[in-house]
Image (cartoon, rainbow over all chains, first blue to last red; front, side, top):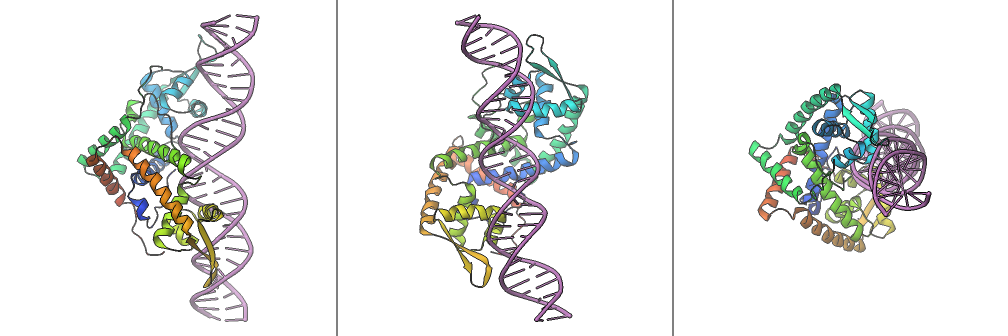
Length: 159
Length: 159
DNA sequence: TTTCAGTGTTGGTATGGCCAACATAGCAAG
DNA sequence: CTTGCTATGTTGGCCATACCAACACTGAAA
């Protein structure tokens, strides 16, 4: 969660540590994101967006696969999907091969909503990176990609 | 809060957006931090560290000033300070000039604890930045500083 | 047939960042 | 002095993100 108001000062031993900088950067980014979703997001939040994006890109999937694919917990997937279903943005249907499983599909309305959110979110990227030149932006992105590359344990298939 | 297990894949429209990269970077950093505090942090958490650092660096201060200085809410300052006081790491005494105000002072034990946490946290910086060369680390830090510079509204004095 | 892993759900936890209300203390004007 | 205003510390709550635990049930392997 964002710490909206920055401290007036920050202790020296804190203020230049990467972990601190990262958390402040995140606070800023996530604050901007929340504000953007708030004003133009139709009441949806990042879970919804991620789920819609996954469905649009990978096609229909079970909830469990969606959870694994997006890194969202099964229980949270259920909740977010119910929200989306209520708005007619996705459809749940029982998998005939396995009655316990739902097959989730994005609807045309869902795709439209996704596109709309895309725009909102693109605008936010701009805001977030505004202080940097475009060369710096590219650098910044590249550095984070590198930082994260080690992490992702490489997909073992699935979905 | 950290999303400990990264998604196996990430939708294209999500995976290269700065806001996403930032949030993953934060998740990684904050996961590492939490793990570090867990194993070597004596049960303290980031609020405690920030408060100890502020006290060590700026000297005794009232709780309100600590809150303003560190960006931590008054109520959270109270709670964290009680924890620290219980461990003998800080002392609260009533300000004779203003009986409603506490003057908080770090104890020698508090300083020792702070130094210990410093080591732990430094180790974590290493881990976080491990994938980057030292030139890249400097770049990364500089970029974040620039990104954040606009934010901090400039201190209006106090503390 | 008994077990076992996988599924969707409900409900609960923890943390960090917040806000609201309160009693009281000091200050400032009248 | 007394009436207000502001500041302080405290309590108790809220919300969001990310989790976990337990459940009932399905299908498939043993």
